[in-house]
Image (cartoon, rainbow, N blue to C red; front, side):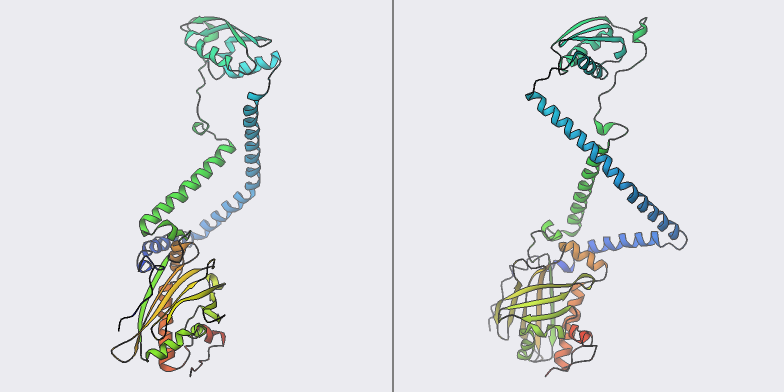
Length: 392
């Protein structure tokens, strides 16, 4: 008999969870093991933990002051940038003293002996007297002309090709114009910017490394826009019972807590919609609504979570008679855990493996049908104190 199985458009990436997350799990386990070994070393672990604690405490105490300094620096820079931007649209009529101060500040950046040059300003007209190295004069005049408030520059400087024999030109060096990030000490604002850029680069690098190791698309890897297909799990099992008996158990989702450990409660809202309550990370319940997308009595049940669910998921169960007079049950579940496939790998590193849990759930289902007793470790049985319940 030809069967019309459900389309698998919601479970693309077949079998991905069985092997592609293993390298991530391995890397995570190695990293956790190394950190634990470093901190729990019998001889030096106590001292290392104390040092880490002291560092964290010290950093916590300094953080408010560092944030305040950085905030003031950023605020001052913002005001300076605003002043630079608005001066193009405002008239600037500084006093002679202000012009002279601006010119002196500018000279220190372009010539090696600014003390050898005397500045006089009158109504925007600047006169330069003193001595200067000939090669530095063009840059000096150009820079002074760019100073706000300067209208003309009259250079009366004596030029010398060499500082030999000129006391005012002895020693000294031209201050090199360097980017703020090339200086020995960074300002608070530069440190904030560099820290933010470094954090972004580190995150991007980690994402690319994880993408290359896992070979999973980024949206599936991190759970952003990955739909219901970040992780896909397949499992088949043979049950020593007719198809109609097995189908009857599965067709009522409220039976699931009788053989599943993490499915705490399923409530049928109507014939196509049900509400699920599942034990999530750290035992915190996670809830969502699911709808039946296709059903063929004694053959197949397919479902998916409704739009906007906390954990997007979809799946189907196939029921086929086997050669021994029993039923082969095939389950496929595709879901998108928090943080996507990466979150799934981290969970596996800490011992929460959905693939293994499904294996155990299906074994409990087999036990329930073949013996008529609810397994002692099913969610419903745990809630009732561990006493087996017999199904009829």
